Image 1 (cartoon, rainbow, N blue to C red):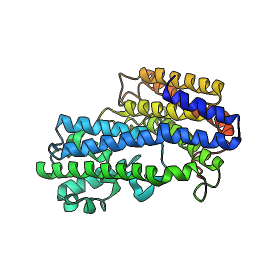
Image 2 (image 1 turned 60 degrees about the vertical axis):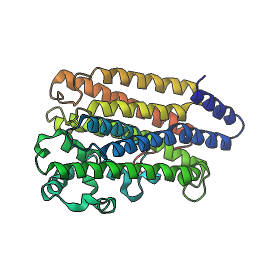
Image 3 (image 1 turned 180 degrees about the vertical axis):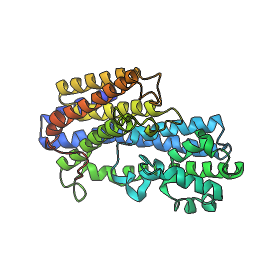
Length: 338
């Protein structure tokens, strides 16, 4: 039996004792098996990326791009955990400013590069720059869009890469530290921030359903557009060919959260597992179109729509069956807030 399964079994055993133990056990399991490890990985990968750029920071460097990709993967796996420390000081937006519906990143990045803005020279100064140029998506433009390759000198481009890498590393470390030293206890022991175990449950449930909603409506919905007006250029991270990769990473991370939250109901847990399995199979069918560029083609569009429907089905089952078991009202909308 895996460590996760043993802990979940312990949590479920406590359910039989008291409703209070149930809440504490499930919250502990999500924090210890999902939230803290996910943010620890993000802190580790971004730190390794920042360390690498101290000696190798050229935008054309394959090692730099690979380290950026590993760190970006770690962020996508954490991107549904948008509460608490990730929201302080706009940390999440500074790490990954998306969706960028007004194209702020390319505009701000172009201006910064053309002016060789000295804001990149110190971490303190760079922390005052627009969040649109401080994270992973700004680097994607510099790394993979030829229109940005020659806007500034190699030295300035290198300084910018270092500034972004150091910034995402500092923000990721700050998020993890606050979770470890303070916020985890607030979630485990309701008092002021969370007034009851049910409110803690609601926060975790909201992370799951909001993640599913972002996946369906943004990561898949934005490039789908409408049948008459598909929008392939709105696909996330299309320049680096990571659109499908992000969907698959988030599916995997949300699956883990859903399993932890539903572990005490074996039938529901198995049902959710089957739904995630189906979504994974349909995502795999898109491997030949990793940036969703073929969304205008009826066949490829159908595959993307099928995957989107899978995600919406998971969210529906979570809302109808999982929410009530966690003490969350069946009609709760994940985007409504507390």
